[in-house]
Length: 405
Image (cartoon, rainbow, N blue to C red; front, top):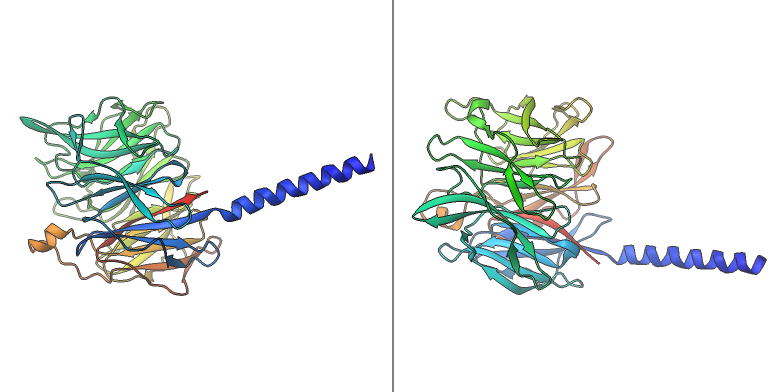
C-alpha cells in the first residue's frame, strides 16, 4: 500500500510539474499597427514579470498603412485592417509561436458583396469570428457590419448575411465594434451622414457567429448630448458584459464632455444610459481592466491617462484616488491592459492617417512610442515601467496581446 501511495504521489507531482512547465512556456506577444510613413507592425515579447516590451520576430514588419488589429483562437493568426484605398482591406498573417514573426496567409478587399475599407475589428470570445464594418455598392452605398469565420488556413469565410445599417448610416465607416463577452450581441458605433450624429447599434449574435436582427432601437448619441471620435477605440465593455462605456466630446449642440455608461439588457441587448461622468479633460480612447472595476481613458489634447473607478454593484463611474492623472507621450490614441491585469500601456501615435496627413487635414506631432505602467490593482495607482517609453513606429495604434502555446 505504501509503495502505491508513493507512486501516486510521484505521478501527481510529475503532472503538476508538467502543467506548470507548459504554462511557463506559454508566450505573450504584443502587436501594434504603425499607420504612418510607409506603415509597419511592431512585434514585441511581453515580459510577464516586469512588463517590459522587447522587439522580436524581425520587428518592425513592413505593412501598407496598418490601422486596426485583431487576433484569432490559439494565437495562430493576426488580422489586419490596412492598406491605401483603393486596394485596402483585410490581411491575415500567421504567427510564429516561437518568435512572434508574421507570415502572409491571405488578403481580402471584398468577400461576397461586401467591400472592406479601413475599419476597426473585433473578435468573438472564442477567437473564431471577426466582426468589421464594410460597404455594399449596388448603385447605392449601404453600410454593413460583417461576420467572418477564420478558417484553419487563415482564409476568411462570410457567415450568414451582413447586418445592413440604415440609409446614410455607416457608409465609409471605420467606427469601433465590440463583442459582448458572453457572445450574445455585437455593438457598433457609426455615423449618420445626414445629422452627423453617432449611432450606437446593438445587434443579435447568433450561436454560429452570424449576425441577426437589430436587438433594439439604436442609441442616437446626439440625443445624449454626446459627440464621439469614431476613429478612436472609444467603446469599452466590462468583462461581465453588463455595461458598455463610451467617451464623449463636447461639440456644437452636443455639450456633454466625459464618459457615459450604458447598461446592457441581458435579455434583449438593448442599451440604456445608467450613468454619466463629466470630466475636465476630453478623454477619447477607453479600455476596461480585466475584472471590470477600473476604466482607463486617454486624452490626446493633454497627453494624459486617467484610471477611473467603476462600482459594478451600482453601475456608477467615479474618480479613483481623487482623480490622479498620469503623463503619457504626445498625442496618445489608445490604451490597453495586459491579460494578467498587471500592466497598462498607452500608444502615443495620434489619430492621423497617412492620407489625412498628405492632404493637410491632420497634424501628427506624436512621440511614436508606447508608455508602460505597472498597475497596483488594490491601490488603483500607476507607476512608470523601467524602460518606458518603449520605441515603436510612426502613427502607432491598435495594441493587442496574443498568447501562443
